[in-house]
Image 1: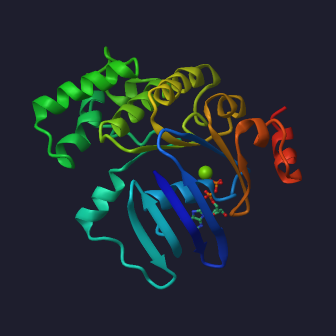
Image 2: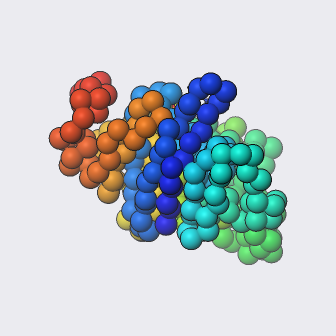
Length: 248
Ligand code: ADP
Ligand code: MG
C-alpha cells in the first residue's frame, strides 16, 4: 500500500531523513517510535507531501512520485489533491475548523474535495460520528468538546475522505491521560476493520498491542524494524533498548 525508497530530506544543513526505505502492506498497522527530533513527523508528512522530499520515491496505493534531488515539481493541484486524498492525517493538535460545527467539520472535505452532494455528505458525516462515539455531538462546536472528543472528530473527518491509509502523528500526546483511552479505542477499532495505518506514538504498550510492525527511528534513520515481539520486547540494537528503557 505504501512504498518508500531512498527518501532524503534536509532543512538547510540539517539532514532530517537519511535514505529511508520502507514497505507497508495493505491492512497492516505500523507503529513508529523514536526520540523527539528523529524525523518521524517529517516522514509522515513526506508520505502525503505536506513536506516535499529532496529525493527518493513515494508510492501510495500504486501511484508513485519520484523526487530526483533537483527541484522536483509537485504534481499539478488536482493530481496533488488526489494523491493526498489517499492518506488521512490526524495531528497532535486536532486542527479542526473552530467556526464550523462537528458535523460541518466532517462534511467539509466530502463536499469541497469529493463533490458529494450535501444531503449525502451530512448522512455520511453522521454515520462516521456514530462510529467514533459522537453521534450526539453533531451540532456542537469544537470549542465545546474535550480533547478526546476533538480528536475523535478529527479521525471522523479524515475517514470521510475514504483514505487508503490513515497517518496518526502523536494523536494522543496532547490529551489529558484520562482521555487517551477513548481515542486509542477508536484506533483499535479501525485496526480491527483492517485499515492500513501508520501511528507515530509514545504509547508503547498500545503499539505492542495493535502494530504488526514497529519502526524505531533515530537521527533520520530507521535503526530497527520488525514485529513488536522483537523490536519492543527483544530489540537487537542498543539504541532501541536505551530508548525503550525510558518507558519502563
Ligand atoms: P519528530 O517528529 O521525530 O520529533 P521531526 O520530523 O518533527 O521529528 O523533526 C526532525 C528534525 O527536523 C528536527 O531537527 C526539526 O527541528 C527539523 N524540522 C522539522 N520540520 C522543520 C521545518 N519545517 N523547518 C526546519 N526544520 C524542521
Ligand atoms: Mg513529531
